[in-house]
Length: 634
Ligand code: AHR
Image (cartoon, rainbow, N blue to C red; front, side, top):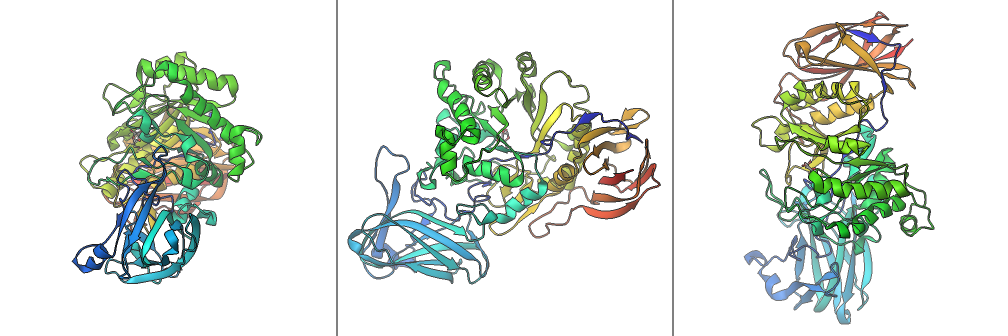
C-alpha cells in the first residue's frame, strides 16, 4: 500500500461521525431519560396503565380498603389527568408503580421522589413510599405527610437498601378519606451532571465517549407520526415538565419479538434537553422536523399546502428557540429554562424518509422560508426508498436540481452489501448535494434475536464500509449508525448500537467500530492505494488514511474481513513518521459472537505500542480484524 503524506485529498468535517437518537426501543422514556415511574401523570391512553392496585387473594385487603381512579380536571386540557384515591379503612390501601419493566435500584444510592397531592379535608395522615422486590420485601422507605387540602408539591428522598433490577414503587396510605395525586416522579439522585429531570449517567457516558460530531434528534419515524396528529411537535416538549403532553409512541407497535403496548412519550426529555445534551457532548444539534407528511408506511397523511404554514413556522421558531436573542419570544423561553446563551444551531432537517412530489412540493416552501430568514442555517433534506423499498437514496436528482445542500440517505442491509459498497460514494457527483448517511446498520441474515444481531460480522462489515465513507469525506459530511439504543426487554428494532437494562448498559461491537472512527477521525483525507487504486475489498482488505493536522498524526484504518491473517506493508511518502506509534486492534475469532450485559467486553479494542521503520509500516492483520494505526508525523 502507498500512503501519500504530502497531499490533503479532502477535509474531514467535524460532524463526520455523529449519533442518531430516536425514542424507539425505550431509548428515551425507560432509557436515557432517568424517570423511573411509568405514567407518572396518569396521561396514558389507559390512564392507570403502569399502576397496580393489588387485589388478588394475597392482597384482598386492598379491594375493600380503597380504590384509585383516573380523573380529568379540565375536559379540554389533554394533560390534566390525575388520580383520585379513596381510602375506606385503615387496612393499608396501596398502589404500586411497576416502572419500565421494573425499576433498577442500587444499594445505598439515593432516589428523589416528588409528587403533587390535594388531601381532601386533610383526611390522609401519611403516605408511605417504599421500594419493594418481587417478594414484597421492602428495599427502602420514606414517608410524606400531606399538609394541604389544595394541590401542593412534596419532595422526599429514599435510599435503596439493596441492588435490584426489578424493584417497584409501593405507595401506602394511612387515614380514611380522599386524596388526589399527580406527577408522581422518581429519579436517581445521581444523573448525568446531577441535573433534576436528568439523564441516566451510564448511558450518557457511553455517548460522551463516542465524541460524536452531532446528535440528530428526535428520530426517525416518530418525527413523522403514524398520523399528523401523532407527529413530534417540539413546542409541546419545552417549558415546565408537568405541562408537557404525553403522547402514544409511534413505536407502540407489534414488532419483531418484543412488544411495547405501554410505550408512550412523556417528553420529559424534550427539545431543550436534547440541545443541552448536544452541548454537553460537544456535538452539533441536528433536529429533524415534520414536513407535513405522516409516515408514508402508515397513513401517509398530508397537510394541505394551504395549511403548511404552521409546520414551517415551527421550523422558524425552533431556530429562534435555539439561537434567538433572549428578547425574542422563543429565545426568552430558552433563557427561562436556564440557557440564556444560544445553542448555536447550524443544521435543521426537513422530513424523515419522505419522497415523491408531495415531499418536494412541501420541502420547497420550507427551504424558501428558512433561507429567507436564516440564510446560514444548513438544511438537511430527506430521501425516499429506491425501487427495492429498502434503500433511502431516492429523490436525489430532483433535490439536486433545487440545490439541496445535504441529503439524508438510509440503508439497513445485509453484511455483504456493506462490504460490497465500500466504493459507494467514489463516483458521487462532487458538485451535487452532500451526503448525510443518517441511518445505517448491517443486518445479519436469519438472526431474529436482538443482541445477537449485533454480532461481529455486522460490525466488521460496517468497519469495511466506513473506510469508503472516510475516503469520500468531501461528499459525505455526516454519518450515523441507527438505531442508537435499546432496552433488552422492550425493543422493537434490532440491531442497535447500545443495549441496556434498568441497571447497566454496554456498547456492542458496532459501538466500538463507531468509536474507533469517531475518536480517530483526523482533519484531512490522505490517499491510500494499492497499484494506484483504493482498497475496497480486493483480497478482503479495505483501507482509508487520514491526517490529524492538529495532533500532527497519521491515522490509517485497515480492515481484513477474511478468515486468514494478512500481512500488509505500507510505504509512507514525504518525511515519514516517528518510529513509535500506536496500533488499536478490534478483532474476534467468531463472526457470530456478540457482547452482552453479562459479557460486555467480549469484543473490544485493544491498544498496543507499534514500531515502524519511519517510511514503512508493516502490519499483520489478524483474521476478521479492524486495525487503527496512529503514527506521529515527522
Ligand atoms: O431506525 C429505525 C427506523 O428506521 C427509523 O425510525 C426510520 O427513520 C427508519 O425507517
